[in-house]
Length: 431
Image (cartoon, rainbow, N blue to C red; front, side, top):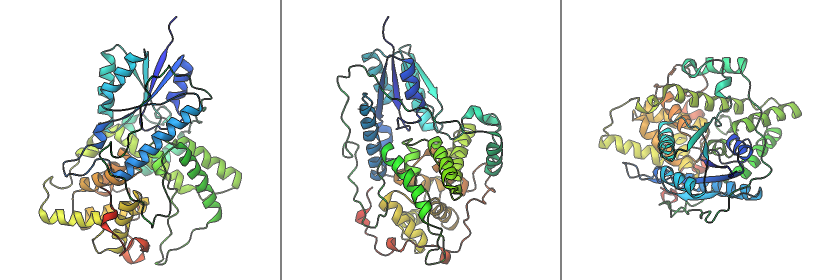
């Protein structure tokens, strides 16, 4: 009897813990072939001349893939790394290694689902099946108290019903051993230069260094709990609340840690420490679920919604450039954009504020802001990014449901991240 080999196609699930496709493949097959493909589609230059994926985000991705390879090797396995169109790379590897089936986690945004469909068609031509799993949400689709088509468009209603009538599944067990076929060429990790990008300079004002990978993500999760034990909420110098966000977004977005792992760690922390200051983290997880399910329900509508004409005047372009570079003259807006450009990360509140300023004050096309965030944010996730921008622009499916986004504070009340004001050097921005 011939051996069964299953190819595991990693995308935004760069972990070995709580990873259903990896564990299921190990259980069902004699050998497992883990693969990650750097798709040139995500590293192309957009119509306005900017990279679709910026250097900071790309570096975090490279670190995450490298960490996944290291963790697979520790279990006796290996990660094949290729650069190219997955619809060409995966069928070739499937034929080379006698693969019986391909596993992957289902995506919801249209660019990602289009790529999946191309891969599925190419594999089907070889009479191979692409099996879809659901592994990016906190609540499993099958455990929701309503079908996808009937999911409430209001976040408040969604939150109430899900928390009342659904349960979060336990985490999937972590594999103890992986057996791979004899791999003749595992492939080298590409460099940023290989991907068409320059190495970004680390800004001296950075307080937290974001390093990609499951190992760093799990360490950050524990740091978050330690920080919450030691620090009580304080006020900034202008009376604003100092940022106490979890900063787990980058690792969650690439699937270096799963939302279920974060959730159950929160539950354990609350039980062991009798702590009740992790509510914002629970809320963050629910918002991520909400936008993913909204994308599943409404599809491409988030991208197709129009707030302004596609054409941009020279005056509008100048305003957009000032917004991008933090030259608006509004301290909090400018500081937030300086920080985004320097680190690839700003708090959720800052994102809501700079997005609201672009849409309401500058009256510019929200899609340009969303595309800029896609380039810069190291925790970019299609559903969360485009869903949030559409929401701020008043184009979400319940734009009145704004009570979780307090956009009404006066600029004078906001913490201005003073280390990112008046000391900004444009040369430090890596495009």
